[in-house]
Amino acid sequence: MSGPGWRAHGITLLELLVVMLLLGLLLLLVMPVYSEQARKARRVVATAELLQLAARQEHFFISHRQYANDLTALGYSLPTAVGIGAQGQEVTAGALYEISLQDVEAYRFRALARPVGQQAGDQRCGTLGIDSDGVRSATGPGGVGECW
Image 1 (tube, rainbow, N blue to C red):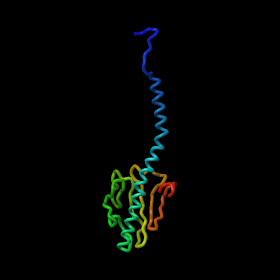
Image 2 (cartoon, one colour):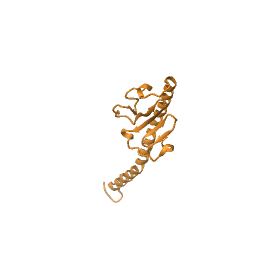
Image 3 (spheres, rainbow, N blue to C red):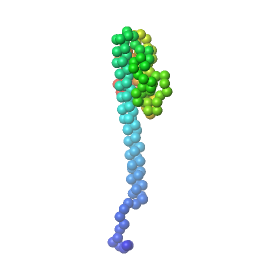
Image 4 (tube, one colour):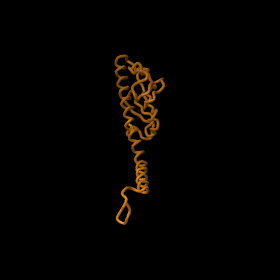
């Protein structure tokens, strides 16, 4: 049917292209913010694991009068829990951080969480750490206040 009073209903190709363009621009604006929030959420895995490791070290110290030299002495299996890599082992595909002990002596230790896998792009905080005095650290420009 055609005629002077008849009008087709629907959307034109131009209208569809404008909507697609607007959605693409919105996605470009939102993705960096979303990615940063996801990195922040994944950082919680590292900070929680480092605090747990420090607590295990203190418990070990009470029993043995020295800190443990490796993660297995603290009850970690190799590889450790999901989201955490294992010291001295290949990091699993789903790992976010590789946990390690450094500078271990009888009366001091330092535990580090190095980002790997999908968290490796976390340049804001970099490697997170905690030592036997409870001093927290971050190698990135975000510093301890933003990263812990």
